[in-house]
Image (tube, rainbow, N blue to C red; front, side):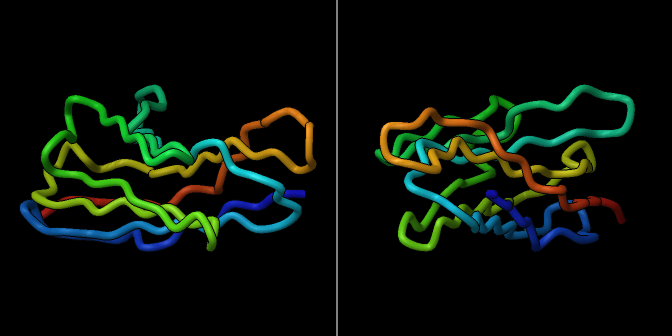
Length: 121
């Protein structure tokens, strides 16, 4: 069993900063990638940023230059530093990990429960 737990969400004023964290635990042989998604009310879940085990990153156009994804492979942790936050960044932020639970096994997606980010004055 693999669990992902996010933390760091909250209420922040426009222009402010937040740092989200996500820790994966349980039976983990390796992690191929970890990513942050978000879902605003009435909208579909969208990809925000991805970090691969090799260190490659990818960002949604809407957050480029403002958000930074980073991670600690040894701790199975990924972070999302969010700067210059805008009201349109308001959403529930979810962490996803592509995890292999045994040598030679397949990678499967595991999701956290989400953390609320609200940007408002």
